[in-house]
Image (cartoon, rainbow, N blue to C red; front, top):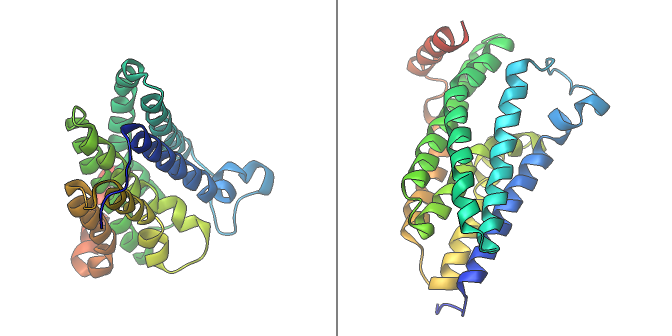
Length: 238
């Protein structure tokens, strides 16, 4: 497959639209379970929101929105403003990393810390670790735009697990792997379109994050993980 003729501007617009799509996916996923709750009421079985839930929502939506803004700043050539807003991005990243374990264990405790909830904690903590590594690497490689922007979007795979999990009552794979994995597919498509090969970040990072999303299926109901989950709840939720 030979690459089609694409310019830097074409690539910048592609990444900006892909970032915009991740924001729309996040908004759509949380419409009925969070954003429209004041109008529609809480879904059946859901508990009232706590301040920690609202803080988590603010940080997560703030991150998604900032990614879109930053991407379109690059398209418009406003690179200085892009770098200036990078400081806000770093602050949001650190807030997500620090608050993540508290939010995950808080939800587990609120819903009774049952064996099912403790098992699912493997998914949420796995996603926290994934976006911590991927987005941290993106900041490290911020002077390499080709690496930086791919890592930023791969980090969204872990963050999109939650909204895709709320879109429909679908099997785990579709909710937490196939849905967010559309980001990896889009990156692979662009790489082949523009370079006729996969970028090294897409090849290894894309495969790694998809396998990582599947990994909790192997151990989430094991005795050792349930023991770890109880310890996490004791440390972060007490």
